[in-house]
Image 1 (spheres, rainbow, N blue to C red):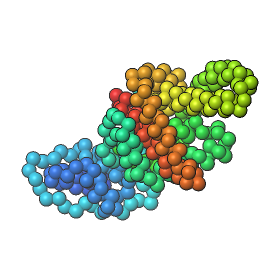
Image 2: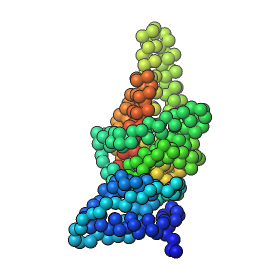
Image 3: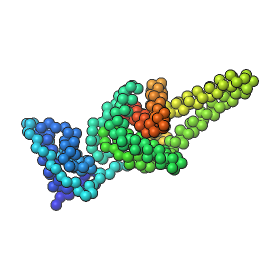
Image 4: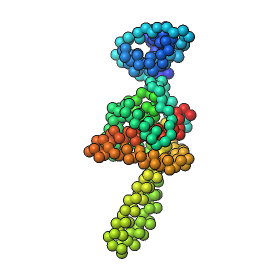
Length: 322
């Protein structure tokens, strides 16, 4: 018997494939789209894994006829005890990541402008809110338990999950653990960012120390002004570094390169429209931290929106497969 293999290496049952091809052929003759066929299959007993395994091949092996024909009911197939799972392919540095599973929904289209980026981020999170909240909870809990050691790779994993969502692929909470495939690059980026912040604090600290010495002779009001200036400069520094490194995390999660390449690419990209990106990062940070006012729990919802907005910004500059 001839064995057919899907892109992930799992053996495809030729009987089930033939059955599905017959339905797909009739569906395409009636003008149904890929997503419509997929939705019908899921509603008639096919699992997500089965559809991801069988439908792309069946779709590729059939051609729509020019004449319209009625569509028969999709074959109802009882799922096997343990359906095969199509594995992911680990990204290769230097090239955009490629997923072996076919998109299950239309990818988001690149947009420009703070309002469009925010709207796109909201749509991404709202359409899969349960997975987003659980993933954010997993990232936060594991990072806290491991005293931050797992924080950088999990953050990269969360970016990777959002990229999959943006590109139309199915997501699950376990996607955040894919960041451990990029553990070295994730920590390299974290150290580069930390070094940039420390350098900035040193640069700020010297003039602030001088002003503090002068203000010590000027009374409480002068010291208060110095304190206010210190807070403003510290906030500005954090916003500046976040803007400069805007594209670095998603760049690594997208499989395009390591921490140094990601930093260089981010700096070059941000230079094209620095003030627009800075304002966008500020909006994303405000949204991400807004949930803290609801006993801290709301951040599980608002933080993914802020992160999804950043992914929308990233894809407007670095599109998938380009």
